Length: 308
Ligand SMILES: Cc1cc2nc3c(=O)[nH]c(=O)nc-3n(C[C@H](O)[C@H](O)[C@H](O)COP(=O)(O)OP(=O)(O)OC[C@H]3O[C@@H](n4cnc5c(N)ncnc54)[C@H](O)[C@@H]3O)c2cc1C
Image (cartoon, rainbow, N blue to C red):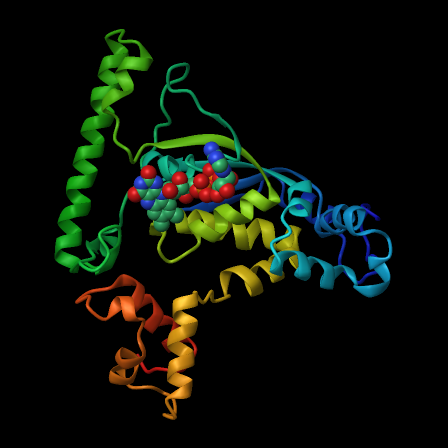
């Protein structure tokens, strides 16, 4: 496998030039956060190289490298994707970082606010960016709050953050230990960390954190990592990840049952809601509200079998 630039015999572009282009380039996220590539071991070819060890040299004749990567992704053959490693430097507000750090399969070294003075920067929210609480999803947002409300929220945020910052500085000036002085800093305070992960686990992180169910802030970090760093470094893997993970649709046994019953009903799509309710799973019928039924309906809409 060539790793020294140029085009390989399988048509996949070699990545080494791109690593040098990307290294230490800070991609901004939120008002003062960023993600930045520190190091990368491997490229699309590393995944192929590892896979061919297990499948034998004979696979070279039956599938080209792109086809092999797509096969691996489709069938969740994960270990070849663990052969590449990506190290990032990230700057994230603490609340976002708290979600990020739940991903245990990464190696982390974080800025210490016991050892050093806390980073003098907090995540701020623009007046037109305050989101309202969703009523259907207890963990989610639903639309934006009116501009006049946003103006007030941003003004009080500014006051609060300044007061917290002042209190912290005063404590330091009075000789309070950094490890104690920090305790009232808000979750909006930025932290920085080196975060290293293999490609398989990074894709898992991105699948969860680029998803629409993830909080908008961490979604912005994940999308930046995915589109600005991973895509240029691993274009073939990224394409397969989009096709077979991010933009794929998983159907459960129950949902296949619903679709089969609708297809056998003799009616033509798009199906009406009454048709859907008639074909729904037996277990959902007695339920006034069912998240699983709603998810099934959403999938039928996505497939063009029902209207929104
Ligand atoms: C939208 C969303 C909402 C969430 N809400 C909450 C919440 O309300 N409360 C909350 O506490 N968390 C919440 N989480 C966090 C979530 O439960 C996971 O802890 C987090 O996403 C990390 O996922 P992970 O364990 O798959 O990833 P990683 O820790 O990166 O692990 C990757 C994979 O390695 C394997 N693995 C890792 N550790 C172990 C282990 N000890 N044993 C066996 N296998 C292991 C698993 O296959 C795992 O999927 C939420 C996450 C998302 C995306």
